[in-house]
Image (tube, rainbow, N blue to C red; front, side, top):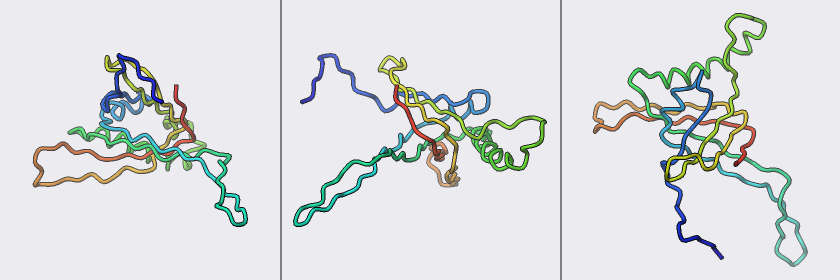
Length: 164
């Protein structure tokens, strides 16, 4: 049975803030327009009994989906360049392991998704540990646009998330 208090506020879909690494990814923090929090699964196995329906048993590990942001493109494409350089840095990292000049930013970053109250104060936080981008989605340019701004998806993999 649900237990609601009289003054319960419901979570609004625009009440969030992204924090990554402001030194290297400030544009991504600012221009993230939406976040699709990943699904969470637990593997199951079934035990078969003769003349009975198999009985499911919960598994031993959690399986995390992928984290996706829809990002608003700025006119100078700084957010896209920031992400492109992140990808490029991950590929180049293997080739520059023994070079001591200008270290590349880390390939893996913790991403924090702050859930805000109706007063825009942080209430809860998802922390995605060791996140790394795996896909920059299509960017659609169209001469018949009706005035919408360009957005594109960015997908991340991560080790696990915590909820605080």
